[in-house]
Length: 161
Image (cartoon, rainbow, N blue to C red; front, top):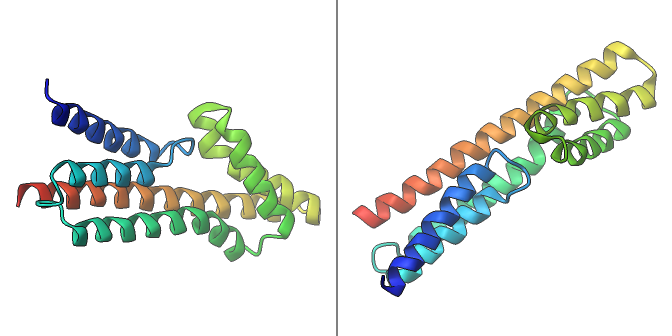
């Protein structure tokens, strides 16, 4: 086995783990995809995957990071969430990491609803805020998955063209 082959294996592994990370919040998905693509560009001496392509991938990754952070907050804000609800959603997200995939998907909703209930003692409003936060979080995750696959597509296209 040549050293280049091992570098390519690492590049592909980073990209694969990164794709998984677009859904699993424990892993920095698009950052790993970017690292794998930059490694692939470096292996090739930036001949097929040039600096312009790398910068396009950086921009897509930054957009993904911003969307990931902002999506749940926008859902909560759109529903008129209190500061407590936003804090609750953040706490719920962290707690959800330790509960597996179900926790990752639903604990932001639970945290936002509990936070809103603490702030306003209104069951209906708490549920509305929790659901809006959850929808925002899910839309952000969907966008992150789409952007992750776009990054992989741009990288592969640059390699093949």
